[in-house]
Length: 92
Image 1 (cartoon, helix red, strand yellow):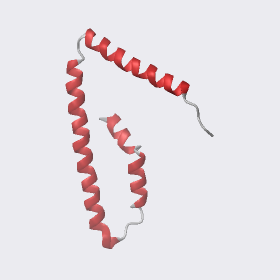
Image 2: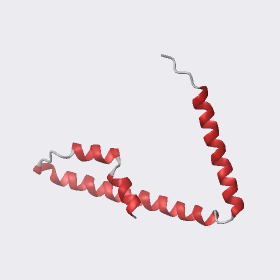
Image 3: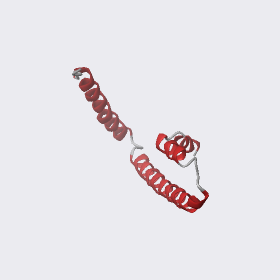
Image 4: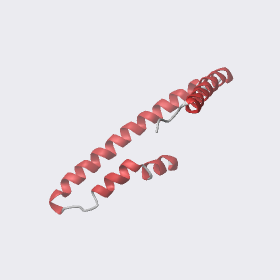
């Protein structure tokens, strides 16, 4: 729970939105409340979806064979990304 809170507190998009709302006009206070509630509800739904997906994936990764397959897939992707970065020429 603490890791999720840390991620939300350091999210640059939310920090920028918070800065944009720092000069609150009292006439528009209800608009800010509605926007805040909407962002909070959306964040809860999306993070709940991520949690459900992670729980489902964790259950399927109990066997050593599935972990080995996952490690090989992601290892290959990282090697491919490294090869692409090594071959990249920047045109200045």
